[in-house]
Image 1 (cartoon, rainbow, N blue to C red):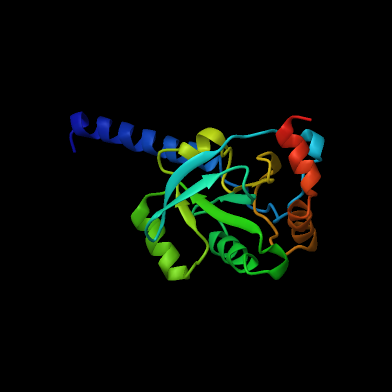
Image 2: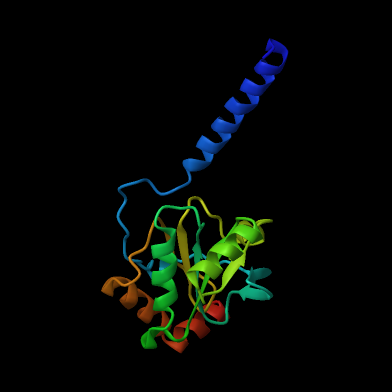
Amino acid sequence: MRARVAIPLIAVLGLSMWAWRAELFNVARPGDAPRPLTALPVGERANVVLDVVLPVVPAGMQRVRTGDEVLLIHYWAPWERHSRDQAHALDSLRREPSLLGLRMVIACSDPFPSVARYVARQRLRLPVLLDGPGELRKKLPCPSIPYTYVLDRTGRIAVAQAGEVDWWSPRTIETMESLLAEPAQQRVAVLDGR
């Protein structure tokens, strides 16, 4: 191979490896154990205004907005470590009777064909939203994969947690049940600005 061809080829390969390696810094580290979700105290929750319509796998569109219900958004990718376990645990948790008022979605930035194949193979029933252009990430940043947010009924961030989640931990379930049970007076006071 001539140097005229080899040098640019090596440069492209080196740049590709660097870019790929840089992306891996955003992924949970091996050895990190799944942790239960923990809610922030009411006074420490930041408000977020969210109203986006995103494509959902396998087909259709879904609106995601704050202020209507308790909303769990789990940023996820099919290629992450333990992706199948995390998605299946969350998918089965959505059927837990004590959590029926909780809306759960998975958000993914990967291309449609690969996500659609993965979701079909795994038979996930949980909505998997495609946030390729980053409309959702503009409002709720995703500093690492996986990353989980839970927004209370008033649109405040009650949980912002990096890493894998122990979805069936009693503490996780208690956290979500407590957010679902927050008193209506508290919601009205926050909406009125009191």
